[in-house]
Length: 456
Ligand code: SF4
Image 1 (tube, helix red, strand yellow):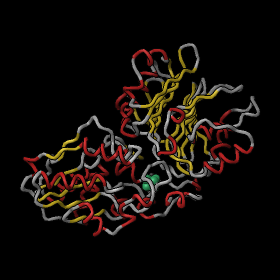
Image 2: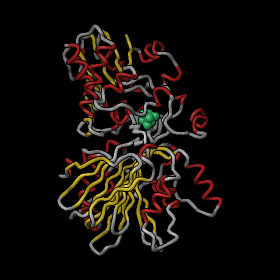
Image 3: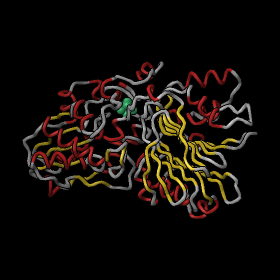
Image 4: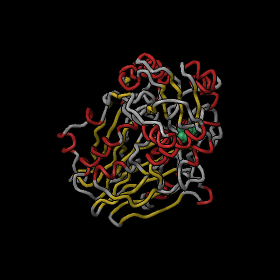
């Protein structure tokens, strides 16, 4: 998922459209935007599908104004459907507001249950709706920031929220900083985005990241900062998968460029797990940088042994196994003249269910590769994520069910090796900590009943 907000810039709806398009890799199930139009009215359009399918020129023009927020959605099976497509938009006596969210609140079931017992009715499974219910506005004279801070204090887990009223945008990030949220300047206005690659597309200049535990208010007075938790309570547990898989290589996450991270992880992968081979091939797109790093460190030529059909969605984030299987078959082709007769080092970013790895190894063999040595630029993924990344249940995770040797046989490779924990963290220059829970089970937050749920 990703969020994008624009404040104080002409043609905000067009800018949000382009920005969401840039972040389409973070979710393809649905998207939407809420903008304040030239008459000061909030307008929303949302739909299931890609940004280019949901929006057209007329729809964007009808929402035109100087501020708005947008969202692209990917979801687990529990929260599909139009009701969950964000931003959500609420009418309230104290003023209308809209919310968009990236991440997952781990105590949402407890909070929702408690609110329902008090009479609240929910339309969606979205954490954005939960936050809207928690933002009480009992005293109309009190600034809304107070009620937002009180609401955020009740949430546990991973979230980056954008909340928009008719005259300001609030950008909020959980106290662990699981997912990125950055602020850019564009003319006299501001842009807030889940990834900095959107800034380049729409011409904004990066200013800074929203800090863990911070709420940044953006309005005609500029930007102001509040913290809903003590800085000592913040932990800087950026999701390692943002660097490894999710983010675009041209994005910078908390001062570290994603391409540079992946290249370094590829170098370290070679030093930890060299392979006797002829060429290095990366799985497009998210593993190309790591393959380049492996190639440079090993001295083996980097070759374009796999070609991606760019018009098929990402397999990992398709919502069902049947769709994922189909997606893998459609999206990659081996280049026979390059791999035939060669011993190939195949570099991939991660192994989740093993579906993709097995098919790619098969494909390369069918295309004439004599050996396929699989090198994974992250540790073995053994635990589910509860922070908004759909790595699914324990049972589905290949390396939770079997050893590395067994997994090697299961995917049909000649050898298989993973990057170590230390090298995964060390590839992010300047970072001293990250969330690596899906690789080791050390969850930075309480996770309530969710491990049992993941086993079902
Ligand atoms: S558990 Fe894994 S995918 Fe989830 S936030 Fe942590 S590192 Fe990211």
